[in-house]
Every structure is written in structure tokens, then in C-alpha cells.
Length: 110
Image (tube, rainbow, N blue to C red):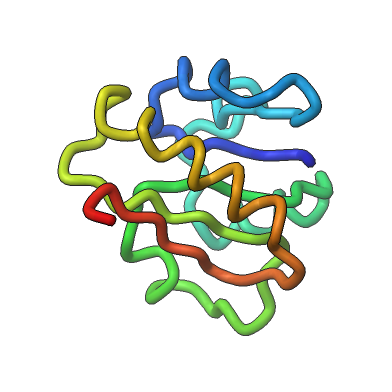
């Protein structure tokens, strides 16, 4: 699975994924500062399967009826590695079972 981590997610988060996933950061792709609408087009052009974000507003700001890939929103109190790391098992579980391009919200409050 080809995964992109949004630029406001700690780059060390990508090291938590099993090696069979291709995980890139916005910095890896040199897409820093690109707005969400253009970013969604780039996700499609580069055939990403998943985009992991902490921006809870993106699904409301963009037309999600025609998503280029699955979007996973990490709903955390504070966007730090300490808060997002415990979510990795849930992220991996959701990615295994995802069949449609949709928005999935994973909360640390579960």
C-alpha cells in the first residue's frame, strides 16, 4: 500500500509502518505548502492508496464524493508523536479492511 503522511505529521511516524507499506511524507515528495485541492490531484496522479492527516476540516473543505484515495483522519488532542503513535494499530487495521475510497476517522478517545 502506498501511503502519504501530511506535512504536519511527525516524519518519524512513517517508521512505525511495516516494511510492506510504501510510506512517504509531504517533504519526501517535495510538496510542502501545496493546498489540499491540488494535493488531492497529486495523490491521484502518483497513485497513492491512502492519505493520513490530522486536519479534521479537510473532509468538509473538499468534495469527498470523488476521492482519489482513502483519507485517514487522526483525531488527536495534540498532534505529537506521543499522541499519534498509539493509533498505528488502528490505522493498520482500517487499511487492511478498506475497500472503498472514503474518509476514516480514528480517534485517540476510543
